[in-house]
Length: 310
Image 1 (cartoon, rainbow, N blue to C red):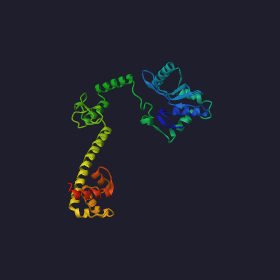
Image 2 (cartoon, rainbow, N blue to C red):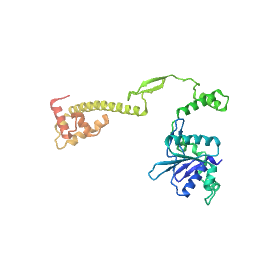
Image 3 (cartoon, one colour):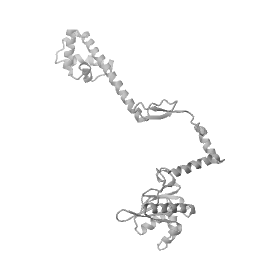
Image 4 (cartoon, rainbow, N blue to C red):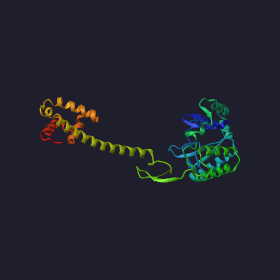
């Protein structure tokens, strides 16, 4: 059946050989056209026609829908187009194989040759249009009536003795869920990050409404722990410097201010081994609360030795 061949043409994903034939006809006469530009809410369904035509000011003036020779499909399309015409005051036309034949009579090539060209093209395939963004209903919400039809159809499947019902039952058995039951009760919780309410299984250990909240909360807590740990390390470093100064009182007292590095190098090495800190600015900050440099530190150490601060 030719209707099933879909593929790309001039940047548009056409869903049938008839649509391709009509697009070729338009291009032959240099008629500008758009494809599936708008979706119309008809009340009873969402409908996205095929071809759109605009005037020089960009106003939509005509819609053309292409359908196969299926009588039911044509009837549904005609109903939708009539609704668009009444609601939006737009001229609408429905074309199928017979109408395309008439359009192609004046052309130097036949409709069937164009259809064959489309079918044999390496850029087309059968049923490709039913998946993802290429599906005409992609990202469209079901209308209330459509949801009702789906629900009624599902009920009929459950009450039937069909293969579809057996597949549904197999899927439920595999998931461990019984039809009509929730296996594990749910409960509402408040997210510890943003205090938003969310629902989870009662057995779940989930504390956050999303991974984003969980990540933000973890960063905050990690920062708090780091700050607290840094305070403790700073205090320990200061106490170690005081004890080191007292232990090495003679060296510290006799250190001239132009040879500070010689005295401080073994102290800094010890601090790095004990506390994992080698940046002198951090060491200075541990003592003074800010970086004051080596000279201020050695003067502090001399004062410790002289006044026996501990």
